[in-house]
Amino acid sequence: EVQLVESGGGLVQPGGSLRLSCVASGFTFSGHYMDWVRQAPGKGLEWVGRTRDKGHRYTTEYAASVKGRFTISRDDSKNSLYLQMNSLTTEDTAVYYCTRVHQQFPGYDYLDYWGQGTLATVSS
Amino acid sequence: DIQMTQSPSTLSASVGDRVSITCRASQSISNCLAWYQQKPGKAPKFLIYKVSSLESGVPSRFSGSGSGTEFTLTISSLQPDDFATYYCQQYNSYPYTFGQGTKLEIK
Image 1 (cartoon, rainbow over the protein chains, first blue to last red):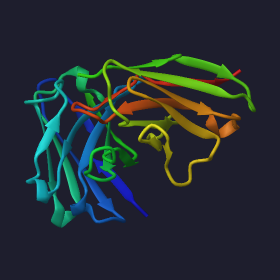
Image 2 (tube, rainbow over the protein chains, first blue to last red):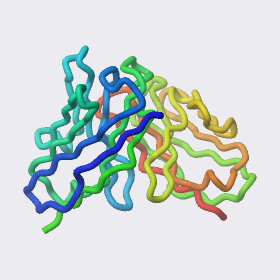
Image 3 (cartoon, each protein chain N blue to C red):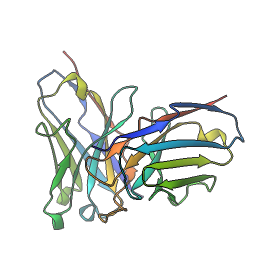
Image 4 (tube, helix red, strand yellow):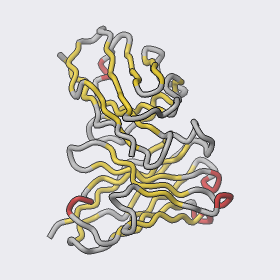
């Protein structure tokens, strides 16, 4: 059974940093791209970014709203995905979901499994 | 960025009704469109990929259609478990973008 378990959320002041983690199980983590998606309270879903696999040199993509402030990384030896969030603003308050990308091929790189999410609150 | 616009934002319907949700893209996204269902307090659940292909285990009352820039999610006969919020997502080009969501309510 595929499982994605996020952690690391909490309360941080504006301008601060937070690091979210996601531990994966039930599939070959190293063989999948992984994405982060967020959802502000009462709002819709926003794609945050992606990390590719080792074969694609762990390259990343980001939404414009987080580019330069957020960094996605992974540790395949620990089946773990990370989201380092810096220079946080109140606009970054959201539940952050770790998601698995089905396959790397065009047309098949949709998000087929989601974690339960972790809430990051940016407030003074 | 490609903008995804869903309509309606809210839909009131009864058990047994046939309902449709529309998703429009600001430019062509080929067939790279997915649909997700989200219930309050829960993570989204993946339903459909490549416009019309159902994920394993998704009931056949769900179907997807469309091409180019206009797409539709149809539920043929609403069941109590279907009342939720639905999101479309394009995964044709970065940044991947979601529609704003359609809340399906019990009439």
